[in-house]
Length: 263
Image 1 (cartoon, rainbow, N blue to C red):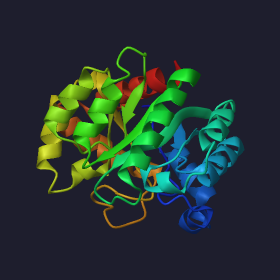
Image 2: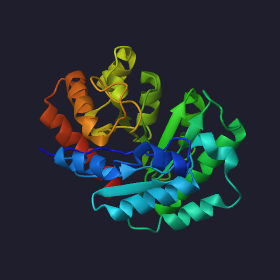
Image 3: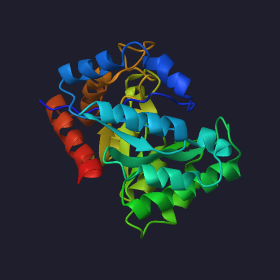
Image 4: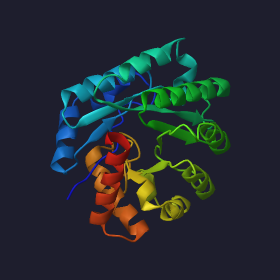
C-alpha cells in the first residue's frame, strides 16, 4: 500500500510562535508516525514570510517533507511591499513544491478585500513565472475566486483547491481550468452531506486528500490535534463516497499528488 498526506499545516495565522506551540514537543514523532503509517510524502504549508521560511527549515530536516511558500489571505494586509520577490526567491529552494496558501476569504475578512485580491493575483503571477502549482484557499468567495483564476485560463496554471468545501457548481466551473480538489477530514463529518455529494461528482483524476493539520481531524479523531497519520480515516470515507476500494483510492490520489507536485 502507498499513502500520501497532502499537508502538515503548522500555522493558520502565520506566527512562528504558533508553529512552535502546535508541534513544539512532538514534531519528530508526528512525522515518524506518518512514516509508520506508510505515508510517503508530507507538505508543510507556509502562510506568510515567517512560516514560509520555517516550512523550508522543517522540510530541510526531513527527507520526506516538502513545503510551500506564500501568504494566506488572512495576512494579505500585513505584507510589506516587495514580499512576493522574497517568496519568489524562496521558490529556488529544492524542497519548495508550490506557492501558497493564497486565495480569498470573505467569511472572516481578516484582510481588506482589495488587499486579498491583489495578493491573490500576485501569487498567481508568481506561480506561472516559476511553473510550480498554486495552493488556493476560498471561503465565501466562489464568484471572485473563479473570475480571477479564469483570467489566467490560458497560462497553463496548475491549481489545487485546498481543503475544498465549495459548491458542486463551483467545482464544475473550476474543472474547466483543470483544477485539482483536496478533500480534508470535513468529508467525514455528519453535516457534510452536500460536500460529500460534490466530491462524488468530481472525477477521480482531479482529487487529492489532505489533513489540514493540526485542524479538522477526521471522525473518529474529531476534536483532537490532527496529524498526517489520521489521513487514513479520510481516505476510507472518500473511498466510500466514490464507491471504490480504499486501496484504489489511495493509489489514485497518490498518483494525482505526484502528477501535480513532482511531474
